[in-house]
Image (tube, rainbow, N blue to C red; front, top):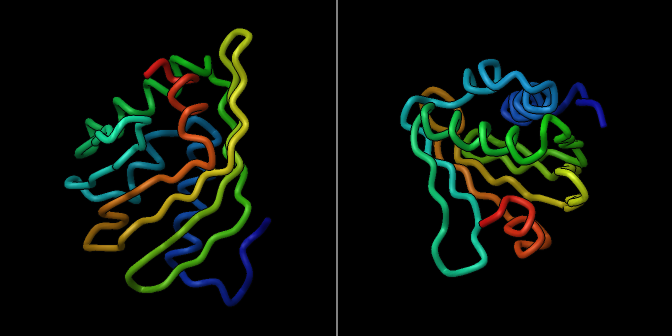
Length: 135
């Protein structure tokens, strides 16, 4: 789905993040997140996996690349944006050996100085995500 002329600039920016991630260009994606970014990734148990700062995001994306061997396809379904918040809905397909992940994912972000500050992820199947990533 392409951006529309009336789409909020923060929604457009989040689409650009998704495009960079789909290309495997982590450096380009990081430009949209401040140094004090916090990334809350769901876990099957009560604890979350929390990644902090650009180093934390690099660690997260290294894990994605390791587990998917580069076969990681986030496909944008829709994006909603305002001055304070952005939500992007993605279909994520990934493969690792015989394991395949095919989920719907909502990524909710608060917008702060320097970009997308706090980021939460809600997949439609947390257990599948944890199996795929070996958590």
